[in-house]
Amino acid sequence: MQSFFSFLMDWANSEDYSEYISGYIIENNKFETFRNDLAKIREGVILYSGLTHNPNLNEIGSWKSELNIFLDTEMLYHFAGYNGILFKSNFDDFFNLVTEINQKSKKKLIRLRYFSEVKDRIERFFTKAEYIVRGQGAPDPRTTAMLTVIEGCKNSSDVNEKKTEFYEFLKRNGITEESGPTVSDEDNFKYNIIDLETIKDLSDEFGQDISENISALNYISILRKENNQKNFYNIPYILLTGNSTTAKVAWHAKVKDEGTVPLATNLYWITNKFWFKLNKGFGENAFPNSLSIITKAQTNLSSILNESVGAKFDELNTQFKNGELTEEQAKARLVNLRSQARKPEEIKQDEIKSILSTISEDSIERFMREQEISKKQAEMHCQENTELKAEIERKKAEIKQTEMKKNKAEQQALSTSLNSYEMLLAEKKESNDTLRKNKEFYDRIVNKKINTHKGIIALVVVGYYIVTFGLIYKYSWNVMEQFTYIINGAMPIVLFFLYSLIFEKKPNILEYIPAKKEKIRSLVYSDFNFEVEKLETLPLEIADLEKKINDIKST
Image 1 (cartoon, helix red, strand yellow):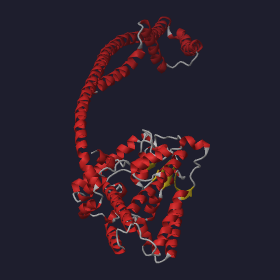
Image 2: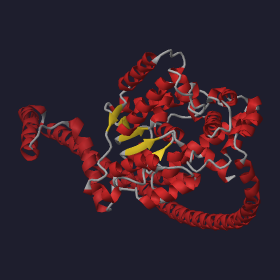
Image 3: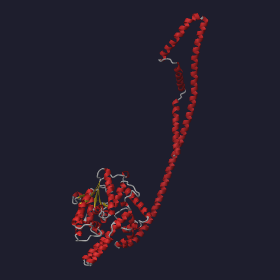
Image 4: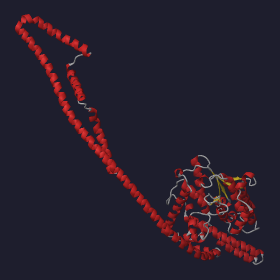
């Protein structure tokens, strides 16, 4: 189970039983349910990996930092299509994501480079191709790129032409050569991960000389220094490798500190990170073929098979040199070995059993030997899981109880607020009713006073005419005529003059009564300390309280 998990997570330590995991996946790919379940698992892995290595989720959808990715020979051969269609397609998916990041940022945030040592290996590669074309050697069946290059070549000039096209292809796509840092520089000593003891220990552990592998990792360590070692999205340098040994060395405890980003990674791992960071989404149409678990199984099984064929090729060479095989026997076995090698796209479902049998039997023996250990570990993990589940249930119960207490406190607070608002609403409604009743009473007093005032005015006018008629009657019209005209003519003028002098405005009988009424009303309200403004604001306050009460009840 741990090996399957590591395989899904694209970890460099996922090689244990990976040939059987890959074979199982390819063999069962014909079942739709199996394919759909694997696709969901793979999408979940990408989400998990992205969330784990992304400290700032607000920046999902864009790439902000500069990153220099150094490619090894296998990555360059993938891009050129030397290792088959599937590897080419996988690298193209990665390259398209890099291009998209650079286009969105409007500057080249991600640069693709290769060290001068890689250029030297490429030169040796094409030189060997020339020897093979001239009939001075046989191609290693594990080296798919070599078989692709020599195909169709009749002489050395054909190989040189392909080499020129290869370098021009890299240049057109912005992939440039760069010399590695000076290892002997005093400032670089503390970032140097190479020493004789480390090289010896790792070489013994992996059963091969890892000097060349760790050299490239050492360059990355020196270039990276101490910059953002724990955050992939901010590291300035990383090596992208197709060499399984280099990847395993990069993840080894002697090279990689706990919690840090490895100095090298594989194509699947980095494509996952770019895909998640750009928020590209998932689904049948959105998900790239390179991130498919089926694709990974094909490329993985192809690599293991070709390595196994290569090991047998080395053994064949040794036997031939030692005279254990005749030339005819060696040629026959070489033809057989070449027929066993496969590109990823050539891996078929009905060939899985024969492919696994071609691979070294050592892995099968190891599998049987470690089954008992795995069983014991599974029992231990089962016990740990049981205890963990019990702890999780206890935590859930505590959280639920805390939530219930919190909800109860909130309900009590709402209930208290509701009671307070309802009491205040009742008080304000009562005050509003009292004010309205008082206003009606005071308005009756005002009307009574204004009616009295109007009655006095009417009595004065009527009294004036009664006195005038009485005098005429007593003294006769002949005597009173001139006085009547004088008084009636002068009276309005005198009254107009006096009113204007006293009140400083023109008299208007239509405005007098309403103005007098308002004056009387103000005096009455003032005498009784009646605040008419409250009668205007209270309905608004009542409406606001009713809204608050309704909001609380709806909650």
